[in-house]
Structure formats: structure tokens, C-alpha cells
Picture 1 (cartoon, helix red, strand yellow):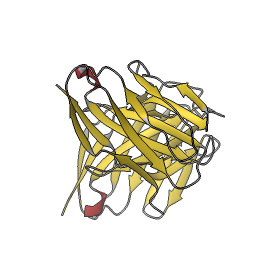
Picture 2 (picture 1 turned 180 degrees about the horizontal axis):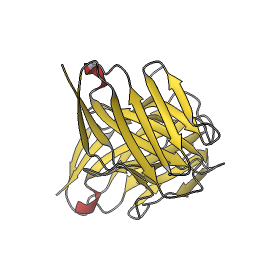
Picture 3 (picture 1 turned 90 degrees about the horizontal axis):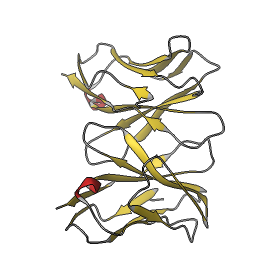
Length: 112
Length: 112
């Protein structure tokens, strides 16, 4: 039972344009959501997070949007840069819980 | 400050062999985690620890054992390697229960 789903295994975007990565979840107990970025042969690195009390969180070129009613979140990268080419994982956890549930990842390729 | 380090980077095991994957963090984090990532899949939690002397099972603990004798170290033991344990293993740590998890670079394990 995949509680966190990333339905697009890959995405290609032109440099300078907006990249939108999507994530859906089924567990209504999740109240904190994170995006991790992973380069080949490296471990995931934390990118941005959002609590369920918010619907948007921004950090520079990265914005995460949360739609609780649809159980959907998205990561927007504007403008996209070649260094953004990586695999992006969405993750979620319930309140007061250290255990993260990860999605299967989306490989983002930025085309110069 | 090295963060989370893992050794070895890569290992080939024969079926039935045993090995220990090492994980060390120098951030004085209380929480430590072991994940595995199979091709095309998200990270799945194997075991975690909330402090020295305390460990607990994650989502996929069968075939593995852990110990946490110090704050810094959290080794993962495979007693009887099986082909199904071929995967990339990531160790992570966090200061608190709901704090950001920082990942090591991973250990790629191939069981033949």
C-alpha cells in the first residue's frame, strides 16, 4: 500500500522555465510533508517542507503547495537551472512521529 | 564536521554471508535511521533508534539487526544475506523526533 505516490517517474523541463513536481498521499493522518533532492551516488538532501497548517511555503526558487482536501502537494522550481537535475522524493509523516513515508521519486532533467 | 558517514560504499556478498554496514554521525543527533532503496522505489525504513541503547523496527526489519551502543554509531547487521537484500542502504540522523533527517551517501549492496 503506497501511502505517498509520485505518479510521474520522470520530467524534462527547459532551463529557465518552471518545474512542477507532484505528490499525492492517502493517509489523512499525515500532517508534515517534505521534499528531498537526490543526486546520483549521494544520499538525499532536505530541500523544503510544509506543515498542514499552511498551504504554501517558499524558499528562494522553491515553493511547496499543499492542498489538504485533495491530499496533494506540489513542488515548484522557478526558474529551473541545470543543477536542479536530480531525483526528487516527496515524504510525509504523522504528528509526533519520527517515521517518514517516502514516495518513489521523480527524476527531473533540466534541458539547457 | 563530516555529518553522516557510511562504510563501505559498495560490497558484493554471497548468499548466506553476513556483514555489518557502518554508520557514524558527528552532529550529536539523538535519532538515527536505516533505510533501503530498491530500484524505482522510495526509501523504506528498516530500523531506527531514538537514543543510545534504544532501537525499534521500521517497515521492513526482517533479515536485519541493529544496535546503538553510542550516540554516534548505528551499525546495521545482515546475518544471512539473501538476493532480496540487494539494495542501496542509507543511514540518516536527526536531532529530534520531528527534526530534519540528514542522510549519509549510501552503501550499495549486491547479494549473489
